[in-house]
Image (tube, rainbow, N blue to C red; front, side, top):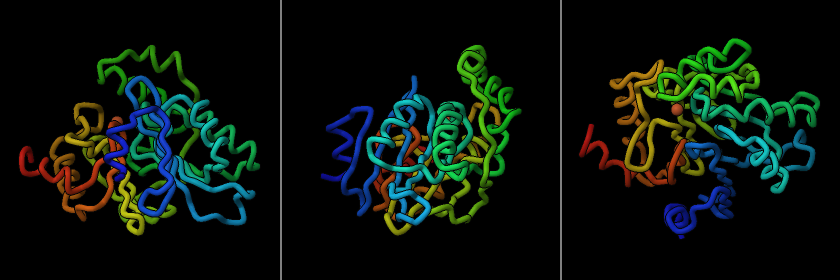
Length: 250
Ligand SMILES: [Fe+2]
């Protein structure tokens, strides 16, 4: 069964794919609006203490669920890569970083985000999360109640960077520093909140830009149709199934 078929039949909060374009991959849906936190394995290396090193993409909430799943799998997060800085994609980062840095003597995980979204991390980031939450129709008090200081980025991405197995694609519009992560070898794209199944990300929050979003969307949808798309919310899909968005809307 393809990943898309698997998604449609079994829709639980934790999913594991033993054969996903030749890779294992894990997905945890977290938080009130169901953010996709993806766990993606890396080639083993001597620094991984015998555990399977992996990338965590968008740890948006429920740190205890993410940490317990990593422990269950015996996977070690070498990197946390963020498709963008919105709170529903980063809120579990403080616990994740603290837990695994303590265990690795401070070495891992390294945190990566695009340079233009770096202000969503670090000690001065509370205000941008409060204002984004208000702009989204939520309450800044919600952020205040949950707030834990977000660690700063270790890696600032630029267009075309190689980040672990991924080529970084800068796709502004949802935020100025939105990126997608493309593993060409595996044929997998982590599209963040730029491209969803049948839709795309909103542009009405601080840093959003509709014209840029459409340009970014067109760029992603011009990629090879067989590429599997793992979005920031909702089911996985593939490029060719979303190219109708161009025909119908763009
Ligand atoms: Fe977002």
